[in-house]
Length: 151
Image (cartoon, rainbow, N blue to C red; front, side):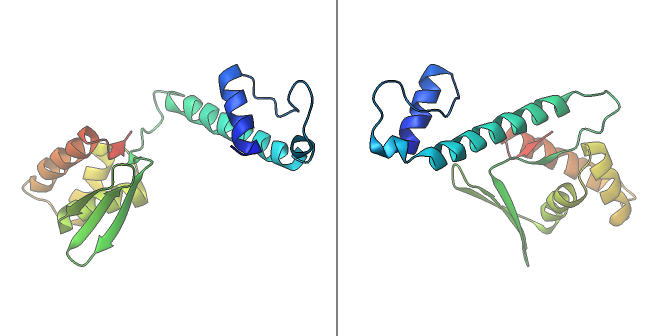
């Protein structure tokens, strides 16, 4: 176990995220690890700031647009046949039709809640009979159910 892993483990177990030297006699590796401790501290501070920002942005106001986005571990790639969604944690691959690809592309580029996305798609594809609205709503709900899309 290297010094970085020891510091992380100690911080995780103690709940104290101080990147100072360990208690007791310090080894030469720990004395030389000042740069590593600074690095560890900066990464932990970054994680705390990011989580605080995300927690604060979840319910700031009722008027705020609840923008959908692809889940953290989901990647989208447009292809000739439509598109591909790749969930990197479980390594699942979902192939999308051109319609499904258009929905995901609209979500990833323009954002917005489901209603806004569907309205833009209806205008873009001239949906007179409401087929796009029905299909896109079902598809968005399916993506949310599978954990590929988050609000």
